[in-house]
Image 1 (cartoon, one colour):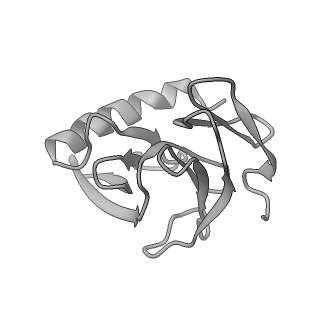
Image 2: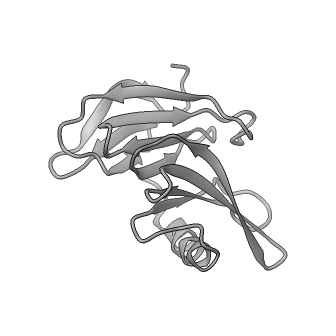
Image 3: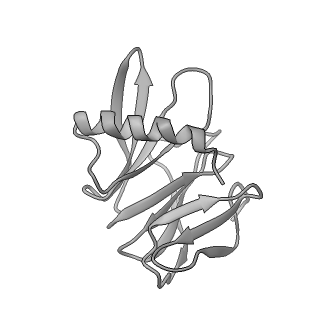
Length: 152
């Protein structure tokens, strides 16, 4: 699963975003892949049905809405190529936000890659082999045939 030490960035960023009006208490967040410079963080914000990116630079944080149109984005994770996976608790579906050259573009392509989850999906993870897992109130489901970073 993802490196737990990166979670501290997500917690701090969500706290910073709350101060800036960009995160609510029902949000989940994940740090962007490691790179030189301050880490950027993606936040699934149930309040606006969107995913936001928090850019850290020069001691300030900028919050940008990068993807909207979700009903209740409740879990997000990045794969090794920078694609963002979003699980939506209200639509019981998993979406992939496609990165270009490792970054989410301004108007990204969003694909629904799985649906019909029956366990109120709200968490998502990627293992060391880039398999995508979704879980909710019951057992985790492996998204059959989908490996993060692989062509769909």
